[in-house]
Amino acid sequence: MTAMIDFGPTTRRMANLLEGVTDDLLAAPTPCPAYTLGDLVEHVDGLSRAFAAAAVKDIEGESVQSPSGDAARLGADWRTRIPRQLEQLAAAWRDTRAWEGMTRAGGIDLPAEVAGKVALNELVIHGWDIARASGQPYDCDPPALDASLEFVSLMSVPGEEAGREGLFGPVVDVPEGAPLLDRVIGLSGRDPLWAAG
Image: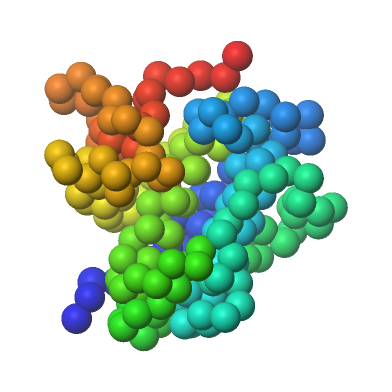
């Protein structure tokens, strides 16, 4: 049986980070060069819906849509809507059936176990992105960070360059003995020393 990972601490951390995103920060740059902070928040909106749908095997609803990343689509209720969706995401992945069989996320068919790991990794990495872009501290649930390291490590071995395309930038080397979070961030193609402005 697949080892389940509790999304709860990571989704709560994301919701707390979103509380710290003020309207004047929505146009701020992020470690994702193509996204403003508002775009990234909207991406979290989309991925929370898509991966909650993937957990319940709703292969014709939200799971078909790619999480976009366009601040113009946030809507006025995003501060209450997205945290609620994050709670629903965590609840959906607490069901053992979420981790079994096949599902669809972003219009791509994949094993449910992989979808769960992708969703958790998105939350970990984009949590760091949002924290950096908004000047907030970031800590990560250790089991989620371990799962994210496993995922990005698999995507970083030689021969996986094509699989990384569109997901991660080139690996950024970090000093030997760097903290685990810095290693995960570097493997995701981000500079752990990135700072806004």
